[in-house]
Length: 213
Image (cartoon, rainbow, N blue to C red):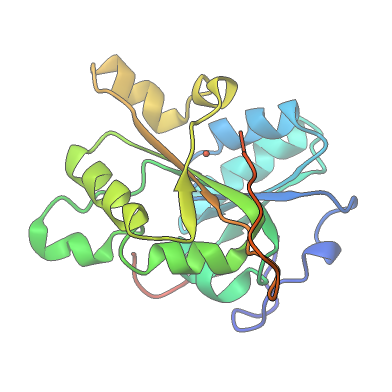
């Protein structure tokens, strides 16, 4: 997908041929996961976000070979795309798998999932929207669960087993080296209508300057 502007929010109705729920993978790698997931769910639309041109080209090639009309890629920084280009309350699911852990302490401010991430995700997600996260880095996982643990607009949920069983390209490599996948998932709380008494209910988953093409 070509971005005609990096300051105007996307019109998602103009991107896909069918108006369906939209899921976004922030940092899609070589798109192995996203292409397979899009095949399994033709009833949803998918956007893969990557800053590396070669990876976006892989997504495009794989999607075309599979004949997928419900998948597109955007070359831009994930944090910028989330905060400035997604329309408010437009996305049903965010996938964040194995983001750069920036292991050195002085570099951790560049991590995608930091203190500001829950607010940006909340703004992009539709009511009841979900975030699924994976990492192999224990310190990063602690940070992820920490920032969402204090985000009262989200509640912790489980990653569906069928989703957890579908690996990313990075994940296959990590498993081959004996590294464990750490998973977290959260759901945006639905706001109560103002002026009404609460009702009981039960409910059953940084980088730097942007570059775009």
